[in-house]
Length: 331
Ligand SMILES: NC(=O)c1ccc[n+]([C@@H]2O[C@H](COP(=O)([O-])OP(=O)(O)OC[C@H]3O[C@@H](n4cnc5c(N)ncnc54)[C@H](OP(=O)(O)O)[C@@H]3O)[C@@H](O)[C@H]2O)c1
Image (cartoon, rainbow, N blue to C red):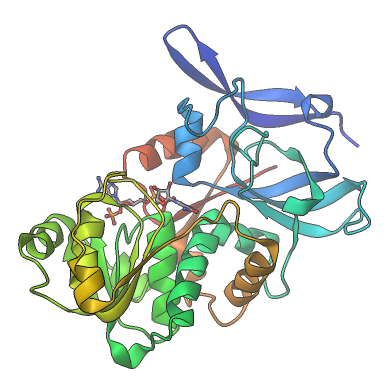
């Protein structure tokens, strides 16, 4: 087995953080239960924060980001996995303060490892990554609440982003009409690739649905990925007994609302945390993603990149300019 590997290495320097591709030693990794040779990773907003030195995500530098990884087990101290098994890891502490999938090897506790579900290749599993798992957990909440396509459309925010694009595509696949909120100009990605039925301009949505209390009841449920005034607008836009999921704060971590959506319409606001999602739920959602929830045009939703393109794409993510999912292929 090789003793060194390449990684995107982020170090703190006077006046900022430096990203470079560096040759590291397997011995630099923590001595956890399972050593995995990473074939693919994917890019998430959290990775962009970590790679830019955000201490809310990563406290210790130097660091190798990458909250997602899919690859082959090369060494296992656990009887649950053996050499040659195909596995994926998303969330927990991976890429936060444990070196992550932007390196060609990771060493992780066995409790973080998921066997690759039948129906997905390693590459496809990273099409989803944390974004897909998070979208899947949101879909699971809505379906479990008894919402069906005949009850009305689903509103999704940050719709061209990682979680938003996955949520839009999965809900469309399941026969729901999706109304997609986006700040970008539509060029066919939202409608043709993801299957959205309606596009709502982000600023127009915020203005319309925050203007008055409960003047509209247009959607059966909502999947919010951005927080702030978009989330408060979504809460006022859903019908009686609607459910709204909340997972992200790209716009803002603040939420200004009133109690009226809750006491006059029985609306439920529910949080999504994919990083610590319990293993049985995690496996159930991965199984659904691999089968009946798998979007129709999955391969058109992603761009495959190499280590040398990572820095540029992380910058795009950080500034809300990314579209769909970026999958990192290791050599
Ligand atoms: N809780 C969890 O388990 C979990 C898991 C994954 C991600 N997240 C969070 O979910 C959020 C989305 O993650 P992601 O990986 O999908 O990020 P992403 O790929 O960067 O997508 C975010 C999207 O939000 C929209 N957006 C950008 N700036 C905005 C603004 N100022 N106001 C409103 N919308 C804006 C953009 O889409 P449009 O241009 O189409 O509007 C952008 O593409 C992040 O906050 C992330 O940390 C949470």
